[in-house]
Image (cartoon, rainbow, N blue to C red):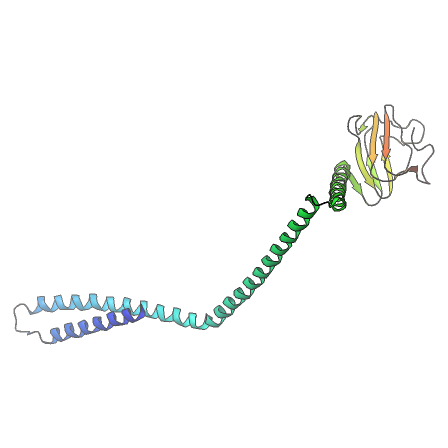
Length: 236
């Protein structure tokens, strides 16, 4: 590309020299001198513009070539790094293929008809245990609506519900649980809840009395107790 542009530029320069020579050879005594001179000068101007544009394209290509030459070591290094990475990927794929083949063999042995009842049972029990553990984990996480590493305080209005009979409010509290209603719970004329339905994924420690004029259902997978500072009884 660059060589072709250079050849074309050389041809343009030769044409320019010829036109300039023709201008010098014009006879001023010729009646058409001025017209011929103007025509030649117009051609010279157009050709000079073409030469300038061609020279600009050549300079751009030279600049790109110089930049590419400067970047060449980096390009080579990147290509080598890609080759190394591809080799690593190929090795990993081979390892995965080998593991898949090993697993296929083990499964075939475990579930084949060659008398490996013990291995089949072990695999079956392991699968069942894993499935049960997964379901238990999902159930445990799904049942937790509130998770607190320390104390938990619920501030609700008098006559409010905490949870419902159909859906207890799940929680997992690392410290004590305190439920504050509209009044001073534990004293005379304490504000009351309309219903209290909660469940805990672990121990449940109440920080103060709870008063409810409706139903109360408290379920915990651990112990249910009152904190030492709570007024007795913990639940009324």
